[in-house]
Image 1 (cartoon, rainbow, N blue to C red):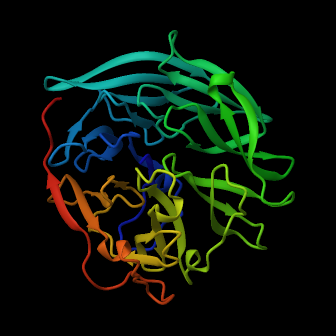
Image 2: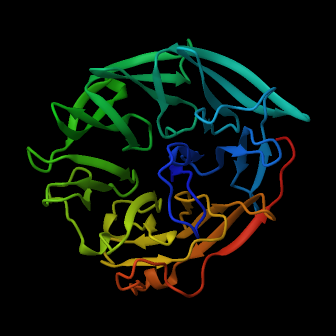
Length: 373
Protein backbone atom coordinates (compact mmCIF):
# COMPACT_ATOMS: atom_id res chain seq x y z
CA UNK A 1 0.00 0.00 0.00
CA UNK A 2 2.97 2.33 -0.03
CA UNK A 3 2.33 5.29 -2.26
CA UNK A 4 4.44 8.09 -3.67
CA UNK A 5 2.40 10.69 -5.47
CA UNK A 6 3.73 13.32 -7.87
CA UNK A 7 2.24 16.73 -7.16
CA UNK A 8 0.57 17.99 -10.32
CA UNK A 9 -1.82 20.48 -11.78
CA UNK A 10 -5.55 20.25 -11.03
CA UNK A 11 -7.59 17.57 -12.72
CA UNK A 12 -9.15 19.94 -15.24
CA UNK A 13 -5.87 21.27 -16.63
CA UNK A 14 -3.10 19.65 -18.67
CA UNK A 15 -0.10 18.47 -16.70
CA UNK A 16 2.78 20.88 -16.27
CA UNK A 17 6.41 20.21 -17.09
CA UNK A 18 7.56 22.21 -14.07
CA UNK A 19 10.10 20.33 -11.99
CA UNK A 20 8.59 21.66 -8.75
CA UNK A 21 5.11 20.43 -9.65
CA UNK A 22 6.41 16.91 -10.31
CA UNK A 23 8.17 16.29 -7.00
CA UNK A 24 6.95 13.56 -4.66
CA UNK A 25 4.32 15.15 -2.44
CA UNK A 26 2.20 12.55 -0.63
CA UNK A 27 3.61 9.44 1.04
CA UNK A 28 1.73 6.75 2.96
CA UNK A 29 3.16 4.31 5.49
CA UNK A 30 3.33 0.67 4.41
CA UNK A 31 0.42 -0.23 6.72
CA UNK A 32 -1.74 2.67 5.52
CA UNK A 33 -2.14 4.31 8.93
CA UNK A 34 -0.43 7.67 8.31
CA UNK A 35 0.55 9.88 5.40
CA UNK A 36 2.64 13.02 5.10
CA UNK A 37 3.13 15.75 2.56
CA UNK A 38 4.45 19.27 2.14
CA UNK A 39 1.42 21.53 2.00
CA UNK A 40 1.27 25.05 0.64
CA UNK A 41 0.05 27.82 2.91
CA UNK A 42 -2.27 29.88 0.73
CA UNK A 43 -1.92 32.94 2.94
CA UNK A 44 1.89 33.13 3.08
CA UNK A 45 2.89 31.11 0.02
CA UNK A 46 5.23 29.01 2.17
CA UNK A 47 5.50 25.24 2.51
CA UNK A 48 4.92 23.31 5.74
CA UNK A 49 4.81 19.58 6.66
CA UNK A 50 1.41 18.04 7.24
CA UNK A 51 0.57 14.62 8.70
CA UNK A 52 -2.62 12.76 7.82
CA UNK A 53 -4.16 10.07 10.02
CA UNK A 54 -5.88 7.52 7.78
CA UNK A 55 -6.84 4.56 9.99
CA UNK A 56 -9.74 6.18 11.87
CA UNK A 57 -13.40 6.57 10.91
CA UNK A 58 -12.52 9.81 9.10
CA UNK A 59 -9.15 11.17 7.97
CA UNK A 60 -7.75 14.22 9.70
CA UNK A 61 -4.68 16.37 9.16
CA UNK A 62 -2.25 17.86 11.66
CA UNK A 63 -0.03 20.74 10.46
CA UNK A 64 3.58 20.50 11.63
CA UNK A 65 5.04 23.92 10.81
CA UNK A 66 8.51 24.84 12.00
CA UNK A 67 9.84 28.24 12.94
CA UNK A 68 10.02 29.19 9.26
CA UNK A 69 8.59 27.92 5.95
CA UNK A 70 10.20 24.86 4.39
CA UNK A 71 12.00 24.81 1.07
CA UNK A 72 9.97 23.15 -1.71
CA UNK A 73 12.72 20.56 -2.31
CA UNK A 74 12.51 19.18 1.24
CA UNK A 75 11.08 15.66 1.61
CA UNK A 76 8.85 14.18 4.31
CA UNK A 77 8.07 10.59 5.25
CA UNK A 78 5.64 9.34 7.90
CA UNK A 79 6.59 6.69 10.45
CA UNK A 80 4.31 4.04 11.92
CA UNK A 81 4.37 5.78 15.33
CA UNK A 82 2.91 9.00 13.87
CA UNK A 83 6.10 11.03 13.69
CA UNK A 84 7.28 12.51 10.39
CA UNK A 85 10.87 12.50 9.19
CA UNK A 86 11.90 15.55 7.19
CA UNK A 87 14.99 15.89 5.00
CA UNK A 88 16.23 19.43 4.47
CA UNK A 89 19.12 20.60 2.33
CA UNK A 90 21.49 22.98 4.12
CA UNK A 91 24.41 24.00 1.88
CA UNK A 92 26.28 20.75 1.01
CA UNK A 93 24.60 18.61 3.62
CA UNK A 94 21.17 17.16 4.27
CA UNK A 95 19.80 17.36 7.78
CA UNK A 96 17.28 14.87 9.17
CA UNK A 97 14.74 15.56 11.91
CA UNK A 98 11.64 13.94 13.37
CA UNK A 99 8.56 16.15 13.64
CA UNK A 100 5.63 15.47 15.95
CA UNK A 101 2.67 17.44 17.32
CA UNK A 102 3.15 18.82 20.79
CA UNK A 103 0.39 20.94 22.27
CA UNK A 104 -0.24 23.88 19.97
CA UNK A 105 3.16 23.62 18.30
CA UNK A 106 5.57 21.24 16.59
CA UNK A 107 8.21 19.19 18.36
CA UNK A 108 11.43 18.55 16.46
CA UNK A 109 14.14 15.98 17.21
CA UNK A 110 17.32 16.13 15.07
CA UNK A 111 18.51 12.63 14.16
CA UNK A 112 21.60 13.34 12.07
CA UNK A 113 22.89 14.64 8.77
CA UNK A 114 24.52 13.33 5.61
CA UNK A 115 27.26 15.24 3.81
CA UNK A 116 26.52 14.94 0.09
CA UNK A 117 25.24 16.81 -2.92
CA UNK A 118 22.15 14.70 -3.75
CA UNK A 119 20.06 12.65 -1.35
CA UNK A 120 16.58 11.26 -2.01
CA UNK A 121 14.24 9.29 0.26
CA UNK A 122 13.08 5.81 -0.73
CA UNK A 123 9.48 4.60 -0.27
CA UNK A 124 8.53 3.77 3.34
CA UNK A 125 9.93 0.45 4.52
CA UNK A 126 7.68 -2.30 5.89
CA UNK A 127 7.30 -1.93 9.64
CA UNK A 128 7.43 1.85 9.47
CA UNK A 129 10.34 2.31 11.89
CA UNK A 130 13.20 2.77 9.41
CA UNK A 131 13.80 5.27 6.62
CA UNK A 132 16.19 4.64 3.73
CA UNK A 133 17.62 6.96 1.12
CA UNK A 134 19.92 7.10 -1.87
CA UNK A 135 23.03 9.27 -2.09
CA UNK A 136 23.73 9.92 -5.76
CA UNK A 137 27.31 10.25 -6.97
CA UNK A 138 28.90 10.23 -10.42
CA UNK A 139 29.74 6.51 -10.72
CA UNK A 140 27.90 4.84 -7.85
CA UNK A 141 24.85 5.20 -5.64
CA UNK A 142 25.07 4.70 -1.89
CA UNK A 143 22.16 3.18 0.01
CA UNK A 144 21.80 4.72 3.48
CA UNK A 145 19.68 3.83 6.46
CA UNK A 146 18.78 7.35 7.53
CA UNK A 147 16.69 6.49 10.58
CA UNK A 148 16.04 3.37 12.60
CA UNK A 149 19.61 2.26 13.25
CA UNK A 150 21.43 2.28 16.56
CA UNK A 151 23.81 5.16 15.81
CA UNK A 152 22.06 7.58 13.50
CA UNK A 153 22.42 7.60 9.70
CA UNK A 154 24.56 4.72 8.42
CA UNK A 155 25.82 3.72 4.99
CA UNK A 156 24.57 0.26 3.97
CA UNK A 157 26.19 -0.42 0.59
CA UNK A 158 27.56 1.25 -2.54
CA UNK A 159 25.91 0.10 -5.76
CA UNK A 160 27.86 0.76 -8.98
CA UNK A 161 25.90 2.90 -11.43
CA UNK A 162 23.07 5.39 -11.07
CA UNK A 163 20.12 4.05 -9.05
CA UNK A 164 16.57 5.37 -8.96
CA UNK A 165 13.10 4.09 -8.11
CA UNK A 166 12.78 1.81 -5.12
CA UNK A 167 10.27 -0.94 -4.30
CA UNK A 168 10.09 -3.34 -1.35
CA UNK A 169 9.65 -6.95 -2.43
CA UNK A 170 8.74 -8.49 0.92
CA UNK A 171 6.86 -7.60 4.11
CA UNK A 172 9.89 -7.72 6.40
CA UNK A 173 11.96 -4.95 4.82
CA UNK A 174 14.77 -7.25 3.72
CA UNK A 175 14.65 -7.06 -0.10
CA UNK A 176 14.79 -3.67 -1.84
CA UNK A 177 14.58 -3.36 -5.63
CA UNK A 178 16.34 -0.46 -7.38
CA UNK A 179 16.53 0.55 -11.03
CA UNK A 180 20.21 0.80 -11.93
CA UNK A 181 21.65 2.48 -15.02
CA UNK A 182 25.06 1.02 -15.84
CA UNK A 183 26.99 1.00 -19.13
CA UNK A 184 24.08 2.63 -20.96
CA UNK A 185 21.43 0.10 -19.88
CA UNK A 186 18.87 0.22 -17.06
CA UNK A 187 18.09 -3.01 -15.20
CA UNK A 188 16.42 -3.64 -11.85
CA UNK A 189 18.59 -5.12 -9.12
CA UNK A 190 17.75 -6.40 -5.63
CA UNK A 191 19.62 -5.34 -2.49
CA UNK A 192 19.49 -7.90 0.35
CA UNK A 193 19.72 -5.91 3.58
CA UNK A 194 20.16 -9.03 5.73
CA UNK A 195 23.27 -9.95 3.77
CA UNK A 196 25.01 -6.63 4.17
CA UNK A 197 23.61 -5.12 1.00
CA UNK A 198 24.41 -8.01 -1.35
CA UNK A 199 23.16 -7.09 -4.83
CA UNK A 200 21.72 -9.43 -7.47
CA UNK A 201 19.78 -8.99 -10.78
CA UNK A 202 15.97 -8.97 -10.78
CA UNK A 203 14.80 -7.83 -14.23
CA UNK A 204 16.55 -8.66 -17.50
CA UNK A 205 13.89 -9.27 -20.14
CA UNK A 206 16.48 -9.20 -22.92
CA UNK A 207 20.17 -8.45 -22.79
CA UNK A 208 19.80 -5.12 -24.59
CA UNK A 209 16.48 -3.90 -23.17
CA UNK A 210 15.94 -1.22 -20.54
CA UNK A 211 13.82 -2.79 -17.80
CA UNK A 212 12.42 -0.84 -14.84
CA UNK A 213 10.29 -1.96 -11.91
CA UNK A 214 7.42 0.46 -11.31
CA UNK A 215 5.51 -1.27 -8.51
CA UNK A 216 5.69 -4.49 -6.51
CA UNK A 217 3.06 -6.17 -4.37
CA UNK A 218 4.67 -8.21 -1.56
CA UNK A 219 1.45 -10.17 -0.89
CA UNK A 220 0.77 -11.63 -4.33
CA UNK A 221 4.20 -11.23 -5.92
CA UNK A 222 2.75 -9.13 -8.75
CA UNK A 223 5.31 -6.88 -10.47
CA UNK A 224 4.52 -3.92 -12.75
CA UNK A 225 7.37 -3.09 -15.11
CA UNK A 226 8.22 -0.75 -17.95
CA UNK A 227 10.47 -2.07 -20.69
CA UNK A 228 11.45 -1.38 -24.30
CA UNK A 229 11.94 -5.11 -24.95
CA UNK A 230 8.80 -5.21 -27.20
CA UNK A 231 10.39 -2.56 -29.45
CA UNK A 232 9.04 0.49 -27.63
CA UNK A 233 8.42 1.43 -24.01
CA UNK A 234 5.51 -0.68 -22.76
CA UNK A 235 3.89 -1.49 -19.43
CA UNK A 236 4.02 -5.14 -18.51
CA UNK A 237 3.46 -7.47 -15.61
CA UNK A 238 5.13 -10.52 -14.16
CA UNK A 239 5.30 -12.50 -10.95
CA UNK A 240 8.22 -12.51 -8.53
CA UNK A 241 9.99 -15.87 -8.67
CA UNK A 242 8.01 -17.11 -11.66
CA UNK A 243 9.63 -18.62 -14.76
CA UNK A 244 6.86 -17.25 -16.99
CA UNK A 245 7.81 -14.30 -19.23
CA UNK A 246 6.69 -10.73 -18.63
CA UNK A 247 3.42 -9.98 -20.45
CA UNK A 248 2.58 -6.65 -22.09
CA UNK A 249 -1.23 -6.23 -22.32
CA UNK A 250 -2.64 -4.01 -25.06
CA UNK A 251 -5.08 -2.47 -22.56
CA UNK A 252 -2.16 -0.91 -20.67
CA UNK A 253 -1.34 1.45 -23.53
CA UNK A 254 -4.56 3.41 -24.16
CA UNK A 255 -4.46 5.86 -27.05
CA UNK A 256 -3.57 9.40 -26.05
CA UNK A 257 -2.86 8.62 -22.39
CA UNK A 258 0.05 7.72 -20.13
CA UNK A 259 -0.36 5.21 -17.29
CA UNK A 260 1.55 5.27 -14.00
CA UNK A 261 0.73 2.62 -11.36
CA UNK A 262 0.55 3.93 -7.79
CA UNK A 263 -1.07 1.29 -5.55
CA UNK A 264 -1.85 -2.43 -5.42
CA UNK A 265 -4.57 -4.18 -3.45
CA UNK A 266 -3.07 -5.89 -0.37
CA UNK A 267 -3.92 -9.28 1.02
CA UNK A 268 -4.01 -11.14 -2.30
CA UNK A 269 -1.87 -14.01 -1.05
CA UNK A 270 -0.21 -15.75 -3.98
CA UNK A 271 -2.99 -14.68 -6.37
CA UNK A 272 -1.31 -12.15 -8.67
CA UNK A 273 -3.90 -12.51 -11.44
CA UNK A 274 -6.61 -11.20 -9.10
CA UNK A 275 -4.58 -8.37 -7.58
CA UNK A 276 -6.06 -4.97 -8.45
CA UNK A 277 -3.74 -2.16 -9.50
CA UNK A 278 -4.60 1.56 -9.45
CA UNK A 279 -3.15 3.80 -12.16
CA UNK A 280 -2.85 7.50 -12.66
CA UNK A 281 -4.07 8.10 -16.22
CA UNK A 282 -2.82 11.30 -17.84
CA UNK A 283 -4.24 12.67 -21.03
CA UNK A 284 -4.74 15.98 -22.81
CA UNK A 285 -7.65 16.89 -20.52
CA UNK A 286 -5.93 16.13 -17.20
CA UNK A 287 -5.63 13.14 -14.89
CA UNK A 288 -8.07 10.45 -13.82
CA UNK A 289 -8.06 6.97 -12.27
CA UNK A 290 -7.55 3.60 -13.90
CA UNK A 291 -8.04 0.17 -12.32
CA UNK A 292 -6.79 -3.10 -13.80
CA UNK A 293 -6.42 -6.74 -12.84
CA UNK A 294 -4.35 -9.21 -14.88
CA UNK A 295 -7.33 -11.59 -14.94
CA UNK A 296 -9.70 -8.87 -16.16
CA UNK A 297 -7.62 -7.95 -19.23
CA UNK A 298 -9.28 -4.52 -19.41
CA UNK A 299 -8.49 -1.12 -17.92
CA UNK A 300 -11.44 0.40 -16.08
CA UNK A 301 -11.37 4.20 -15.97
CA UNK A 302 -13.09 6.52 -13.49
CA UNK A 303 -13.30 10.29 -12.94
CA UNK A 304 -11.03 11.50 -10.16
CA UNK A 305 -12.50 13.36 -7.18
CA UNK A 306 -12.22 17.14 -7.21
CA UNK A 307 -8.97 18.20 -5.56
CA UNK A 308 -7.35 14.76 -5.89
CA UNK A 309 -3.71 14.70 -4.83
CA UNK A 310 -2.96 13.34 -8.25
CA UNK A 311 -1.39 9.91 -8.34
CA UNK A 312 -1.97 9.18 -4.64
CA UNK A 313 -4.13 6.50 -3.11
CA UNK A 314 -4.25 3.29 -1.16
CA UNK A 315 -6.21 0.06 -1.27
CA UNK A 316 -7.89 -1.58 1.67
CA UNK A 317 -7.78 -5.35 2.06
CA UNK A 318 -11.53 -5.34 1.40
CA UNK A 319 -11.02 -4.02 -2.12
CA UNK A 320 -11.82 -0.33 -1.61
CA UNK A 321 -9.62 2.25 -3.31
CA UNK A 322 -9.19 5.45 -1.27
CA UNK A 323 -8.06 8.64 -2.96
CA UNK A 324 -6.87 11.64 -0.90
CA UNK A 325 -8.16 15.05 -1.93
CA UNK A 326 -8.04 18.67 -0.76
CA UNK A 327 -10.49 21.40 -1.72
CA UNK A 328 -11.20 24.91 -0.40
CA UNK A 329 -13.95 23.31 1.71
CA UNK A 330 -12.30 20.02 2.71
CA UNK A 331 -8.78 20.25 4.01
CA UNK A 332 -8.28 16.50 4.35
CA UNK A 333 -10.55 14.08 2.50
CA UNK A 334 -10.63 10.50 1.24
CA UNK A 335 -12.77 9.54 -1.73
CA UNK A 336 -13.79 5.88 -1.57
CA UNK A 337 -14.12 3.93 -4.78
CA UNK A 338 -15.74 0.49 -4.62
CA UNK A 339 -15.45 -1.75 -7.63
CA UNK A 340 -18.21 -4.38 -7.75
CA UNK A 341 -17.94 -4.49 -11.54
CA UNK A 342 -14.28 -5.55 -11.32
CA UNK A 343 -15.23 -8.32 -8.90
CA UNK A 344 -17.69 -9.67 -11.50
CA UNK A 345 -15.08 -9.35 -14.24
CA UNK A 346 -16.99 -6.60 -16.05
CA UNK A 347 -15.13 -3.64 -17.55
CA UNK A 348 -15.55 0.00 -18.30
CA UNK A 349 -13.30 1.90 -20.69
CA UNK A 350 -13.19 4.95 -22.93
CA UNK A 351 -12.61 3.22 -26.21
CA UNK A 352 -9.24 4.97 -26.54
CA UNK A 353 -10.72 8.48 -26.57
CA UNK A 354 -8.19 9.80 -24.07
CA UNK A 355 -10.63 10.99 -21.42
CA UNK A 356 -12.23 9.72 -18.24
CA UNK A 357 -15.67 8.12 -18.72
CA UNK A 358 -18.88 9.66 -17.55
CA UNK A 359 -20.74 8.05 -14.68
CA UNK A 360 -20.53 7.73 -10.96
CA UNK A 361 -17.25 8.77 -9.42
CA UNK A 362 -15.81 8.00 -6.00
CA UNK A 363 -17.84 8.72 -2.88
CA UNK A 364 -16.08 11.33 -0.76
CA UNK A 365 -15.62 11.73 2.96
CA UNK A 366 -13.60 14.43 4.60
CA UNK A 367 -12.17 15.53 7.87
CA UNK A 368 -11.14 18.87 9.24
CA UNK A 369 -7.76 19.74 10.66
CA UNK A 370 -7.05 17.52 13.62
CA UNK A 371 -5.83 18.29 17.07
CA UNK A 372 -2.41 17.21 18.28
CA UNK A 373 -1.95 13.46 18.43
